[in-house]
Image (cartoon, rainbow, N blue to C red; front, side, top):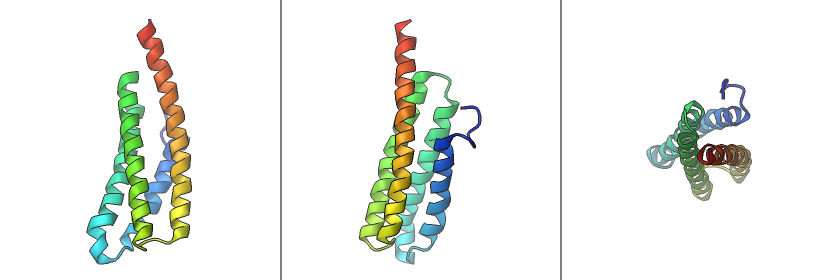
Length: 125
C-alpha cells in the first residue's frame, strides 16, 4: 500500500477514528476512563495494526498484523455495543458505527484473502 491516505480501508478507518474521539469525549465522566478509554484504545490499535500491515515486508508479517486488526475491530464492536446498552450512545449512532465497521471488516477480509493467497504462492515456490 503505497499511499495510505487513498486506500479505502485507511479512509474508512480514519473516518471511524475521527468519529469515535468526539463521541467518547461526551460520555459521562464516570465512563470516560472506562468504556470511552477502552473504545478509543481499541480504535487506535486497529488503525495501528493496519498501518503495520501496510508497512510489513513479508506476507507472513502482513497476515499477522491483519489478524491483530481483526481482533481490534471485534473489540471496537464490543465496546460500541456496550456503550449502546449503557445508553452512552443512541441506537442510531450504534447502527451507523456498525455499518462503518462492517465496511472496514469487508475490506480487511479482502486484504486478508489476498495476503493468504500471496503467502501460499511464496511457500509453494
